[in-house]
Amino acid sequence: MEITRHDSGKIPPSKVVKVTKMNHLVEIQYMEKMNRECHIQKLDKDRYVEKATGEIKEFLHIKTRKDSYNSLHQTFKKLRYLINNNFEGKGNELHLTLTYAENMTDTKRLHIDFKNFIKRLKYQFRNEALIEYINVVEPQGRGAWHCHVLMRFEGIEKVYLPPKQLAELWGHGFVTIKSLKDVDNIGAYLSAYLTDMELTEQNMLKAMHHELEILTKEVDGKKKNFIKGGRLHLYPPGMNLYRRSKGIEFPEREEMSYKNAKKIVESAEPHYTRMYKIADNDFENTIIYEQYNTKREK
Image (cartoon, rainbow, N blue to C red; front, top):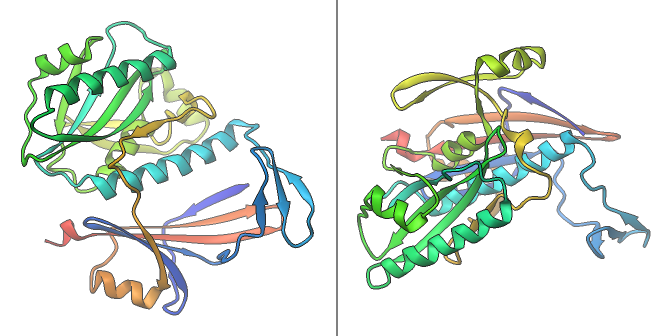
């Protein structure tokens, strides 16, 4: 499958689009060729049946690093939806980073350690708040892992947790705490943080050789350069990249004409738009995304 990206594209007013509403964010997705009916039925993880012919075929599982990248991009897209539907930068929301003092590379231990941390934290707040969370794991170039956790403390308007207290509850290394109040697209902020790699002298030649996209971001008041998607190769195929608590829900997606979708955002202009051309053997499609952020209209 080949995917090429373009900066813009126009959606005809009468065409059907999918609208995803996530708090103050609205995303409109247009597909030139929409599949209104599923033509296959899954039999198991390896096989499916074509409904029209009754022919049994095999799924194509990940074989190459490129296939893995495409799968990861879809995973992070779902993660952005999940984050933006449940977090909007209120006073009872926090972004924690849980790190290890040593070079910890065991992903099973990572999951167990996080479960124990959440149990201890919930016990600490048992009479004050219900804690909902999304836990996303992040790999480092040296093989180490740590967790990025978005938390919402339901039942209280503003939460403050001393770093020393959190480090004791975690018990494996450092804990950093960041407020989300100044971030108006938390899903994009965190997923970019997890996928982009800082440009250094060590990886500069590799980035130039592969003509990778370089981004400039402001981190802690300083401008730094990053390789877009440069961290993706560190994620093992098939790994569960994030976990969520029961109260974290995906947004509902609704189909309607583009003309009616524009009524939802009224006169606002999209803050992000992107068009993709997809080609896979004899199949071609065009996908256009528009995202509207009402916080930026104020």
